[in-house]
Length: 161
Image 1 (cartoon, one colour):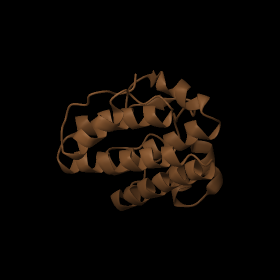
Image 2: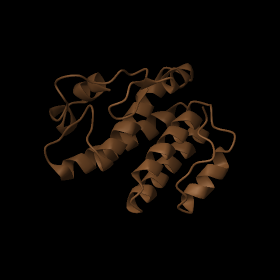
Image 3: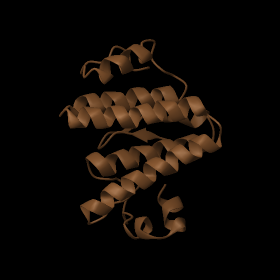
């Protein structure tokens, strides 16, 4: 992700962290070790790790602090989040995986709802379940969980692991 944004240039390139960075083949929660889901995402194709990480980074720009991009201006962080969401969804659409585009659109919307309702733990559960679905490993109750989350339920019924 770091190299792609650096090569694109512009404001996001100017806001890249200079130390650390992301492993493109992993899906990482904030401050946590890489999760096994990263391998499942990587199995889907070369584009998947990058696009999932771009969307995760977009999420972090909106609701926390980015791991790759760290703009000093909070307005730029929101714009960076939007750009990274679009980057990931655009690449997913380019590989023709419209089901995964729908899953990630649900993740973005449901996470926004959870944060608006003051439930960041639910947002993290939504992120994890959605990333599992994009990796082709949705939980057995994935659709039921999404319906419950839309209604504001905090506890997921199946996360896909």
